Image 1: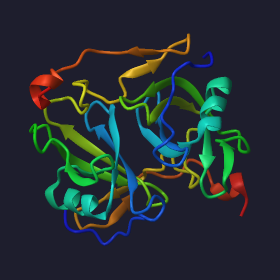
Image 2: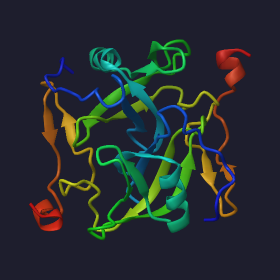
Image 3: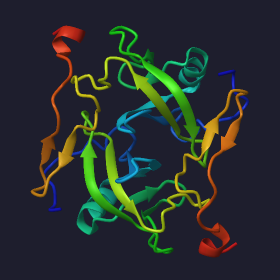
Length: 130
Length: 130
């Protein structure tokens, strides 16, 4: 993937835009995070997903510590050029810090509560420490 | 879907959080928009997707004018309670104002440009006027 000539619109949230990671095979939505221009360029350059960590205010190479990186298979850009969709191969299967495959593992039930679906595929304490 | 007791975190973007609409059958990601608390409550109440239009600064009942509403089949909430995923039945098939099924109909190619994939399923001029 060469450096792109396309111009994304980073203006709507003070230099950030939403990025969705979707499993390229199962089509499961894994997570949503935010990119600044640097994260976008690093993602293009390395073909691994990089985001901007809003909580830590740093460039975040997803899986950089644990090895559970997201290998980018395809990038889609939306009609307004202000959101990107990454089709990824999630190394280690789980994208979520809880050990679940997807961050979206809570489903609204009929009583208005949330049910957790599925089991974690790794123990977060083993991967990230206590 | 009863009024939920769960508390979403609307604090990170001045009262807004990202919402992804995904086709409940094909798993195609259709669009990303933003919800404020009112849009979230309207979505729960009506079982049709409501968003907050950032450009028009109004509550936006998706498809309210054209009839191409998004019937919500399932709602997922992420690990941080700050993003929602709607599994929807997209009436009229196309979610995008361009007439394409998905807003993410532009794919980054090897030369760093964007290729449009697929054909619009409706003519936007007919649906929205010129």
